[in-house]
Length: 369
Image (tube, rainbow, N blue to C red; front, side):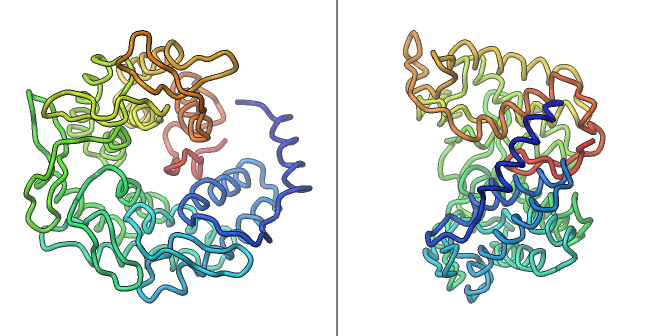
């Protein structure tokens, strides 16, 4: 955005104030995508070595979650000072969303440990796929046993699929590309269905493929963008068109939606960035102007419905007229949604629109100019 003075002030504050020697636990997944990823992207943008050193220090404090696990699947929580770990019940997104950040760190500091633990965790999940190549959505990190039978592209599995592609895109690791392709083929075979001509992805039994329900989380709309990045433009555009119908129906996307009944199952809107993310991905990866226009509708509807006296807020009920606002602006609205809008609309010369990679939390790991 050209805000160099603001970046400089932020870096100075970090140098003086930020440290991770804290006797308290953090959620490993969230800390990685937000803080490790943010520090790495900041380092890539500024080449300030202190940001890279902080990213490494923080990642070292996360490592016990991986190294203390008998399977290599990380525990969900770790104490930053003591390394104590907690909660073995975890999910594909939380165990498999590390290779982009950890791999970037390994490459930056010439230490393969971070890459290796992230890859081992993703492989542990892939190796436990069913005979029809699907994974369930809950697993025990200590035993490696599945604790559910539900396969979904949405939470809590979503970013696992993103980072399989990320391992290929960032590091040309053929294992990650194969793992991504195996799952993508299974998802299209066993979960994809068309209702009233629109493409959707059902929740199914991960061993039999039997449909469990037709509910969708708004977060699942990310999958259109992932398909586009991986080269499947037909299914990418078809799936985004399905969500575009939902946007046209409600103006803003509900948190939960049943495509069988075309009704909202959760009538709130949490200012999620996934639809805007997919619009940007399809725009950048060959789709052109129609996807910027979709992003514009999303942006204008967000401004009209979420604008509050001092900023922007979630919506508690999108079906009320006028919509009933909540009282929260999530951090990811800044980190992701506003970034996707800016990149889609600004044609900024500081971003490489041909060669880029953004993490699941919108951190630019490739493409900074």
